[in-house]
Image 1 (spheres, rainbow, N blue to C red):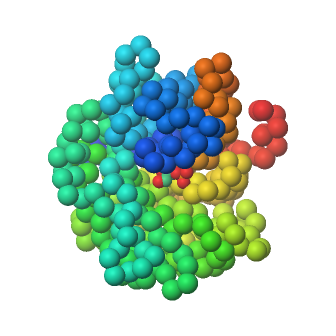
Image 2 (image 1 turned 60 degrees about the vertical axis):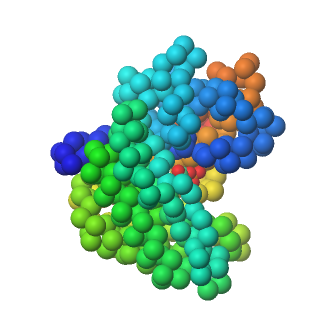
Length: 340
Ligand code: 13P
């Protein structure tokens, strides 16, 4: 492990005014996104869509890195440049999703454990050879009656830490993503209580696995009401609660925190990020690693039609720019209308 190189990459991923694009949808997930615009999920359609995002003029000013999927890291632009090489030339760091998904946790109905540790060392070596300099592993914690259990939280934190240590051994910065889902009708207080436990378990396991905190990025959920909650907390409350919880658990040695959007609307996710950064100074960089919140409006603008390729790119670059501003607290909701 080259510690200073890991730290350099991690700082690059959360560089001021920039954040990450999560474009690592598995084949199943991208099919759902394409179904919504009535497009078949063929390999060529998936390649074209990713090319639209990665080559969007201006986006590189606000995008520090892109999380790729196994299929995507092996694909090329129309003119034959492998995606990782294309991105690297633009100054965008290529990353790779390495977990193999959340599977039912035996003995714990309704809970999952993320798989993918077997053979991970060999896969990381291959991905590094293909140009990846960071990786992602997502643990999923659902809130419902009687769950999550402390056992499921600990099992997922343990797997996250084993993944993170393996990444660092192989010169790859781990994005550590323990996601508490916002599905369901729970209150913001319940989200805070569960996220508190999840982050406590995660950082304890990272310590025990000797993970180098200066060479990782945390990707957490925000502290937010469930999507179906009756009285959803206001944006300022979300921002304050999220910072309160992060300050309890994330040592300043961690260079940056890059949030997932988790089902928030695009504008909600941008506003929350900006409000938090306005509450600074903070001990870490606070930015985005959004999937849906960066892509939803762009994929609709494109609609799978070659004639709308540039319109899709323009919309993606616009969202990236607004989130880049939010990562330094300079976004305001009225910019949505101006930039449209
Ligand atoms: P969302 O921002 O759509 O939640 O996706 C981010 C991600 O990478 C989830 O693992």
